[in-house]
Amino acid sequence: MRELELLLENFWIYKEEDKELYYAIKDSIAKFKIFLNEKLGYHVIVNPSVIKLEKIPGRAESFMGIEDFVDSMEYAFLCLLLMFLEDKTKEEQFVLSEITEYIKGNFMGEEEVDWTLYRHRKHLIKVLKFAQEAHMIQVDDGDEQVFARSMDAEVLYESTGLSRYFVRSFGTNILEYRSYKDFEQEEWANLDKDRGFMRRHRVYRRLLMAPIMYNEGNEDADYDYVKKQRGMIESDLEKYLGYNLHVHRNGALIVLDPEKNIKDTFPSTKAISDVVLLFNALIVNKIKNHEISVNKSGTIILSKGNFEELINELKSKTDHGWSKEYREMNFSILAERILEYMEEFQMVSIIEMGKTVEIMPLVGKVIGTYPKDYLENLEERN
Image (cartoon, rainbow, N blue to C red; front, top):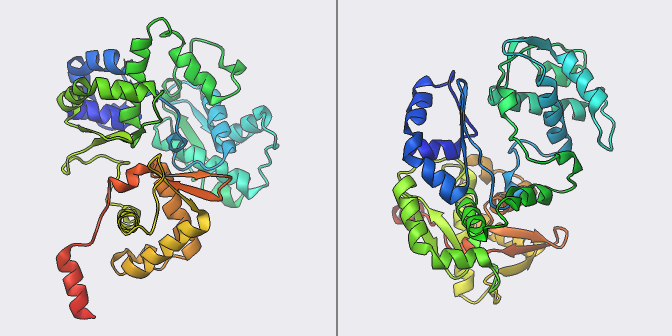
């Protein structure tokens, strides 16, 4: 069902942005509500402004943050912006200096907020841009990009009233939490009496919210559930989403049909995706030729230097078909981009304080090569 897919894919569906889609999803919720409640433990929030599926992950993963945020201060600024907006009614206007004053007065991090610092202003600009893209605020006059150049810049904003729906409701006082694991424990606390429900919800969430669910050994109860309930899971995914479940010795993952057009999947139309497909093929070939050894866990352990040597080899052999951006990219930046992208899709794990790279089994599941006719034409030109 495309409507369910869109709820899973998007943070929320904003009525003013697409009324037709809003009503189409609203009318179809009854078709998959039981699946969401019973298999994922998810609930759909419907109000006159948005439809939101509370997508709580089965397990917190490093790639689940806000894509453009790179510093904890940005997350802190976002939380403070949400607090600032709590008292703002729909269509109420305010100016940038009110936000900066509020954040400076309420920030509790180790580093004091100093708007004379370009870095701090840049962090806030990212947060304001995110809030606009999420339709929580809109610009009525001015441009916050000017704030990057001058701390005296002023912008007139307007609240849409959506910020109150951004954060989920918690059953306990989260001010006492000290780790993200406290949030995970709170999520499962009410299901402790029925561990069957808890495991089912966690497994379905992990399969839908992560690139792969790895087998973590004989004591891995979640993976054992996948193996024992494979038929039911396959049936549910096919019925409600048209997805295919692949279960291997080392992991279980959802594989989409080629015609599916979903953002944040691998492979994708991004140039980096093509580079990584070729890189995965290079690694698989080296395994077949006994140039790289796979350990008992199904992973490959390499120093970061050896990992970068493989990237250098990949570049020398295949960059003739890369996009101009990646073909001409500085090597250290290229290596970092590839490593970050692969980590995001759980193809690698960076260990030992960044000195070692563990290549995960997913690398062997998704590989790519150039079309035969392209290689033949390339050979003729050379």
